[in-house]
Length: 356
Image (tube, rainbow, N blue to C red; front, side, top):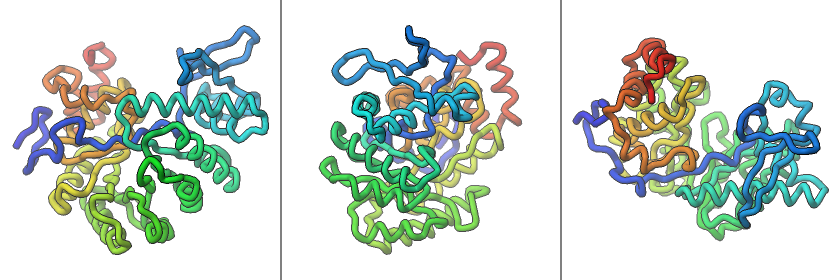
């Protein structure tokens, strides 16, 4: 068949409505930034800077930017890592700082849940270089999130010890969590599957590095899925991250991903989940939201049914009703399907104001 967005496929999409898509809310992550000179940062009467927010009671609040953060490179580059700041406030011995950090996470939990997230991804890796501090941060973040969240966490780290810390802190009341993730370069992560009811994200990587094409993705994912199933995890509790790289780096990155998704869906059927990190595709490009929407629509047509996304910014309802014949979506889709060398047509259309 040929989908509305122009992606050739041998089988129908795995899902046909937004409610069938598993959303892992991606925002509680220490790398998230807002621009210091953007509309989300204000200067207060005393000359200090802050990220304003509305807490869960409806009160207008400010996440103040502390002096220690002003000494960091991101600040000097005009970036405010607001979740890093909130979590570090939570680790403070100052009760007022603790409450401010907790209130900031609480409002984000509420927004993500209201927008349809079924899991909340928590990543603290960039909080600090010290492992003990990272573990403390994960404990605090999981404890804070579970106190107000009706949905389970996705415990996300490149370090298995930090994941283990998050799993140990989670009380399980909202349902089984997700381990994000298991990868060949972290074989010890497989051991965590022995004594947990957690679901698991499997990376389509290999012990030697990242995949270069669709064949690598498929072979890597199959090998790791087999190992996870051997540990007693049901196939319906497995999520494959088929790995998308920025389209600005290689015009074939979209096709490598789509082909891998199609083949993995054919291999494993409808019970397994496929998708995960999706917003990487638009890194470094203008009008990222447009690219992300077009990409997710194409990826759903290829067979994904899950993803790490910000549901506040990326509405699944909007994606399923996307006007695929509109000029902007056509430019984005052509680029994602490798029909726009070096993304030049898309960039030219952006410069001329033709992507609206």
